[in-house]
Image (tube, rainbow, N blue to C red):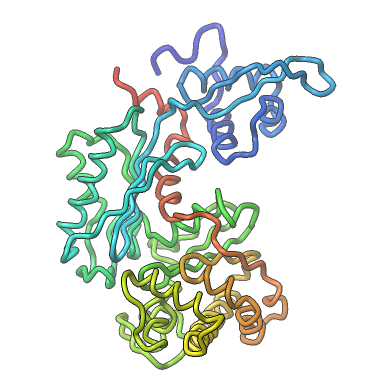
Length: 402
Ligand SMILES: [Zn+2]
């Protein structure tokens, strides 16, 4: 990299730079002395790492007049630089898409919600994604380090969207290839682009910055506008299976009432998504599906019909969770979207159903929490877009004009 490192300062390893930037990104470390301890480096080596990260425009350090405990030396604060590169995160839903600029430290800028094209064909929808990315890039005041896109579909390891039934797409759409081609046509051929399943990315977002922090084996289930997704993060790493399409939890059988678009009957996503809740209460509710379903959950405290529908869906969710706990033995389960509302409204019933239906007694004690992030999949999309920079902070030099 031009000018880095200087002759007077020995080179830091990419690994040390990466670990330091990742610790600052994940939060909780605000002082140089804490960073030194967490990195297991000498003060001098930490100073070298921070100097290079400052030269790369990624962090800023300041002396704030405090003295370090026991050392009497000046205490230095350290934080992500406000001028550090940003990324563009996109979350495609079934009815709308969300777009935001995101910074290191999981800071999302204003989130824009845009209606999907009608019909949401691959060409129209992916074209709209790139058009909105272009709008963010045109307005950006900082260099861009990448683009992350969450899709409501299983996403193969080659970036293809598979079985996107909720968008009525054909069997396999080469989403990453199409998006990369459209970005290249706008002059952004070198911008790293990552495409992932929305539930896997939501789990990654909650794992790093939300209700999953500190969990060893984190399972997340969520249901948004329709369908049910899930993800598993083991010791910080997303589990994606051999072809990238693991954790399709929406197709676990929990009943035998309703046909699923996958060809089976009784899948969790047919029996217990927002549409199923609205139908269980007689199709009531106007406006967007998730909003209407949340209103039914809120009404359950006073409305017997809403209460019966919520109870039915909660019971089915408990059945799905029991199967997953039997197989995966997570230490924490985070529930997102409508399922976070169900957990808050019917926690006793959900826990009792999970305990009753699971094989192991300790399933009843599994740590169940609602998602903590307003937009976990958007945060997850930002995480995978930031990952190349976190892995090699020297890439920051490549994001700036020569
Ligand atoms: Zn199914």
